[in-house]
Image (cartoon, rainbow, N blue to C red; front, side):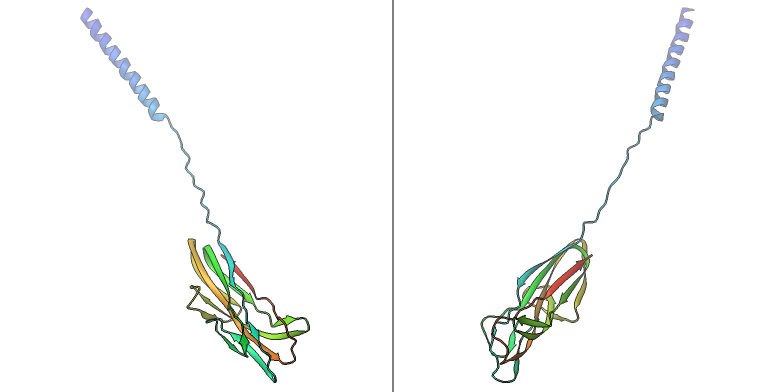
Amino acid sequence: MKQTFFYRLSIFVAMMMLSGWATRAQAQATDNATVDVDIDLVSPPPSCSFSVQSDLGYGTAQKPTSGSGSVTISATTGSRSGTTVSGSSSVGQVRLSGSNVSSYTVTRTFPSSLTRSGGSLSFSGAWAQSASQTSGYSSVSGSSYNRSAGGSGSSFTRYFRFGGTVSSINASDPDGNYDNTISVGTTCN
């Protein structure tokens, strides 16, 4: 009888142990936890900026003794021609730099004349563009230049040159410095 009791007690203890493990296993199986996952994506904003490389300068032009004369600076080559001139000349040039830009538009406004107190000279502007600062310039027609760029994560550089013709230079024009400004702007997307 002792042996039967021990055998029954062993079965009972074994059953209780299995029952406890089963209960613990069940409790562990029903435990839940959640972990949130999120990410906030933003596109870097496009940015563009101009820097002036040189101003447009014609040097000194000699007035004609009769009739009228003109001086031209080529926007594509920077060469100067026309009425007798002295001193150094320079083609106008700006550099446009941008990053994270999908497309951009450059606009320009040329003055119709160069002026000084008591006089004015007719001005007809011309412009050109290139990916290189020193070569490969091609003329731009119209008042705006539109192009696509690399978009997010990329950058670009483009150069613009400004030239044109100063005309109607007469012997009667007052001596002195005639000037005005070319306005250049950009929109970057």
